[in-house]
Image 1 (cartoon, one colour):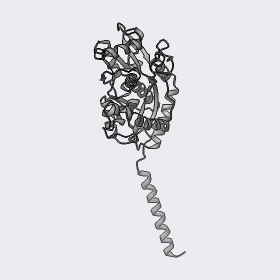
Image 2 (cartoon, one colour; image 1 turned 135 degrees about the vertical axis):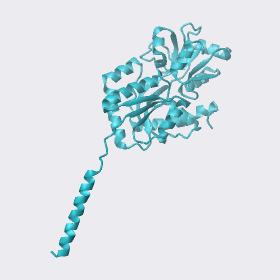
Image 3 (spheres, rainbow, N blue to C red; image 1 turned 120 degrees about the vertical axis):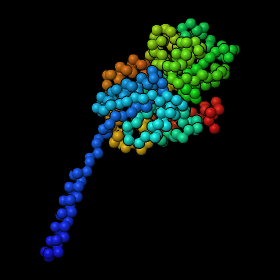
Image 4 (cartoon, rainbow, N blue to C red; image 1 turned 90 degrees about the vertical axis):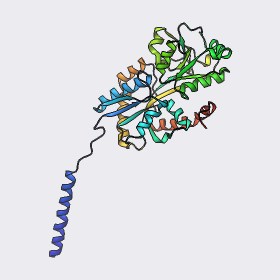
Amino acid sequence: MTNTDRARRRFIGAAMLLGATALATLPAYAAYPDKPIKFICTSAAGSPLDAMMRQLGKQLSQELHQSVIVENMAGGSGAVGMSYALNQPADGYTVVAATGTTSFMMAQGNLPFKPDNFIIVRGLQAEPSAVAVRKDSPYTSLPQLVDALRKTPDKVNVGGYASAGFHQFVFYRFQQVGAFKTEWIPFQGGNQAAEALLGGHIDVAIMTPSSATGQIKAGDLRLLAISTASRDHFFPDVPTFKEQGFDVVESIWRGVMVKAGTPPDVLATLNAAFDRIEASAEWQKFMQTNMQSPLHKSTADMQAQFRDEVTSRHAFLKSIGVAQ
């Protein structure tokens, strides 16, 4: 071996040692999550969506040993919270609520949101809509209410959560099969619609039963119909729309999503934590208490459903003049 070869070997060895030393001193990337996670709830405090986000946040914090902060950003059927989320890094530290109403908001086409801007990480709840009245209401059945809506639509005020959202869609379907037409009064949350109903500001609310569980159980509100295909196991005494002669079968889902581009390992961490949460006795008790049904759908299945809903809801939105 020549002196030149020996020198070259010594140089390469020194360079490799230097490189290894430099790599050893580089900061290691911490595993997700290494800082608090923010949950954005897109409806008002006290709503069923808010209750879900807070319970999920509490259990996720326990599972991942990291703080989860829930912040309410109501408005625009979710647009306010979604705008905020899209302006944050795609790193899994901003998790935003997603619901069937999100599909309607995107289907309008008035805002720069597309299904592929987000990843629906998990669908967690499914719940029907219902027709609710006060305990002293003169309406005791759906046919009786429809008769009044046909004859005096200006004297029966109907409202619910959001404009051009799931509950208005249910009401739109109800109007179609019931052959009547009246105005829709939107609220920022289902619980606010229930409060307006109790306060006499509206006569009928189209809402999820969980928006007023306490008032329904206490008898302050009565359900005239529920939008399940057959009688709901939580409300076996409430007749369906269908059995009263009105073919309306719909349900709304609730879940969580993150900004598109969130790393696969972060999604895997969240999904694994959500698996454990959904299997826990605490979560199952929460679901039972709040009269919710599980969805058991993968991220891919929820994303496909989300895209399909945005397409299918467009026709309804065109009919009420809020989409091209």
